[in-house]
Image (tube, rainbow, N blue to C red; front, top):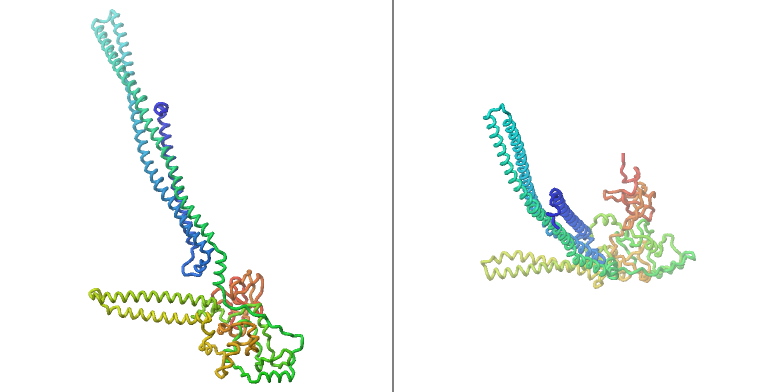
Length: 606
């Protein structure tokens, strides 16, 4: 099967077919190139996706990745990054092993095709030239034969005519002989050219064209084989990265299997445990009998109250509240005296309208305490250095973390001091290397830094020991600063209830009752000051429903009308009140505010 013998007369069709083959190869190269671009784009998108969900450094989001589920998600992101790298490898290998190789081959193929068809056209032009020579000699031979025949006929006519002279007859005879000789020469030339053409034509159709077409056939077959090899390489490039992609997927599966829900639950406990004890049982108070005090009961209670010192409170402590008392309801006026032995059924003084402890505690159980410094906390207020604003357990963790950080800094400074000391020793042994005195200032500075850091560590360790119970609950300095007791109080007062106030501003009635309701309030000295509720400066209508899940916010329903007690200060939040017991912040864009022009502090809009 040869194109030279089977397709000897299909030169133009073979030329079109070979050009089509090159076009197909170039189309395949373009296909692979677009595939590599897709792989690169896919890898880039995967990397961007992985980077997008990576935790930001030194942020709260990074702290969340201590949970096993978040660690597994982080491992998944890292594996996807490696997965994207494999797609980049696919693109690189296809570019180097297929696109670049086939591009060079296409150029060589075009040159080879051009050369073969150039030889074919040259042979074709040669045979056409030979054919034209044959046709020319044939026409010349035909013309000479006709002229010789006419000359012979003229001679015979002149020879037969008796009126023609002998000279004219001789001249016609010579002319006929000349024409006959020219016809013979043309015949010989035609015969020679015909033989030459036949030889050339035989060579053209049986030697030159078969050889040229055979080269073109071999070229086309090599192109087909090369394209098949490229397709195999295309598959192998994908196959080579399958094991690594499988390892990436195995890594994701392994990360998923490493998730431990029990460990995550324990981490939640460690993160949010406050360290407070649950409240104790509430004492039963009998209201079935009228609460009237008789003179005898009053005298009895006064006799039992004798010998106990009267408690006095500083100016700051009068404004103090328990953390369970709502600020919207100011406490009733304090009783005339603290009578721990007062009986429920005894007579009651007209001034002693004391609110029961159970009622106060129920208010705490059914509502959240409102913090006086809410806006300062929500809007970037300063955090105490000893983290006293945090619950005990969270405070302990923060203090421990601070101690660990300071110890690391101390270790760095110690290492730096040791390095400077060694360098100074080298300078002392080899003065030509440097002046030892030049290091004294740096050594002194490092030593001072170490001393400062150690003092900081001692301070934080003292606070940590206080939280962990190794030190008293509050130092004497803190007691003096709290202003809970007057300097004239006898020492025996310190053993009663440890710096606590009752909800009505007076001292707790009985130590036994205070032990039943275990409420520790020393850490709330500065956060729960009594203040008058803010007046309403207008009203607002909720445009959308807002779920107030965060502390300090309040939930509203679309269409609900509420009171505005503090307008937006530029941070996007408006403080509103539903009733005397419910107030908080909502996004300003969620409500339509109608300010009262006559209200104090309201702005006038023209």
